[in-house]
Image 1: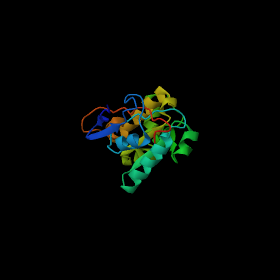
Image 2 (image 1 turned 45 degrees about the vertical axis):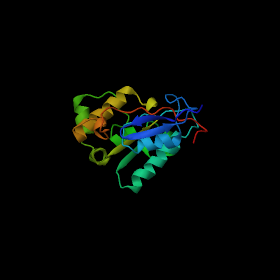
Image 3 (image 1 turned 180 degrees about the horizontal axis):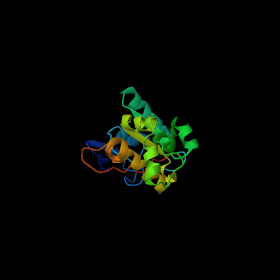
Image 4 (image 1 turned 90 degrees about the vertical axis):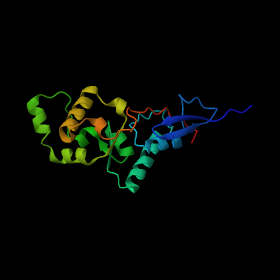
Length: 174
């Protein structure tokens, strides 16, 4: 007896999951891309070679075609080159800083080009975020609060509320 296809709901989107796939373990590149298009804040994960960078680059093209301002960043320079972006440290203006006093932050907060990038981006992609030091992330978040009047979550919000988690993309399921 064949089972009806399962679906996972993300915002207003219903994503079909093949019966042979554990819905909380794996998803295809196409399913991941469909969820990204909803505007949800997501965490995309998967094994090496599963197509995460391909999905992210495809999403960038999608945003570009629609005139949606976005920032492609990564925690390392090598990862940034793979997505044709820049490091999140450079993009946000925090550079190599992780711990900084008030006077140092005031100097950082006067970085006009970085403040402009933060204010203009409606979508922020941070590739290899697991490699980003928590103190650096906190400083980047602080720059966001200064530039936008809200934290990183103020960039994209799902109408329903919290961040949605994308399940690992699996190689060979595309």
